[in-house]
View 1 (cartoon, rainbow, N blue to C red):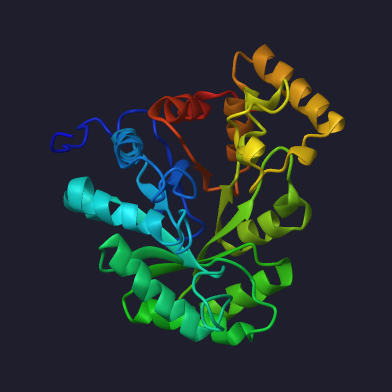
View 2: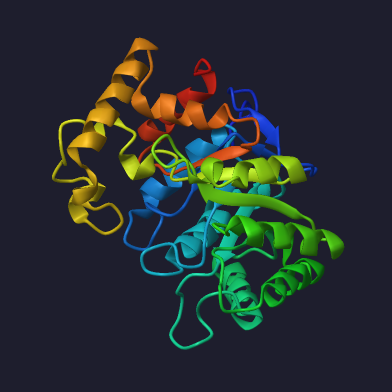
Length: 318
């Protein structure tokens, strides 16, 4: 590819930015997740095209984790290549996040929430991404065995060491979230954001009180899997396509597509059609209408798919 020069109109292409809780951070309402399509098994030129398109359309937030790939670590390696090939001149315009908490390497120190794992993982992540610091570092999941104070103090010390600017947590239960908010505030490293699965099928963060707690305490909220890994698109309305994620059966199992769910998806699709929208556009707009939600994380397998999903920004309230 030719040398990349970002579009001069990238902040005038319709992207909206929302304040993350009570912080100084503004995140794009649509952020790009690297969970799928950016691993070592994926075509780099396609990953590069998607990332360029995203930035040219105002998406400044790229979300990663240590074990995104496959194989583990390879999405961060792709980010490192992208930095060297395209984005180094734009580093200060980017908001790059990564995480640690799930299985990453063998033995007792390559998983969960110990101080040793979190600090070692972030050091590795920074090397793979070829950056000096992460804008945001998450505890990727709640660890019921490690004392919360150990995990939280490690996050505090990571910020104080200059390895991350902000701290987030992902998929922690409500009571642990409350502990985290209090502890981090008392140690002058306030919790920036909570990442949780929220979509029209899975509304657990609303039902469990997570969204209300974040809004009350001035913590941002970002939704992952906003399209339920493709269920909230037109892809499965007539069953399971042979080349779909569900057909591979790793993260999305075919037995999930029950007759009841299929009927529900078809009703939602009809509702979207009556609004002049795709099901995906309506599903993303539904999340963004919640005032406590800062951003939605979307994946993309092509620039065309990303273009279609960005139409949610102009959708009417549901």
